[in-house]
Image (cartoon, rainbow, N blue to C red; front, side, top):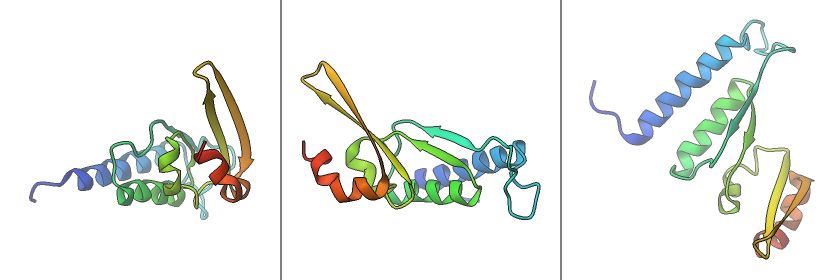
Length: 120
């Protein structure tokens, strides 16, 4: 087997970790892959900072296939990578380097109003 590229290593790592999580918490115990009282929550901080979009989308697709719930923390310039795969947005804006404002909204609302938030 030859050397793996950085992207191939990332995909292999995601697949192994995701599968291990799914197995450990019993997400594959029934026909639908869902155990109603099982742990399915993963947080990804600084998501996609050093990745190309294909690898980031691979991770999102893998998590969906494994029925994992994601909290994705990402800079606003990368939200386009996940906006078709998320249901809710919590958008933080800093004002005057002293105050933070938190906006909570369904993704549909964010898509309609995103120019208001991303161009500030």
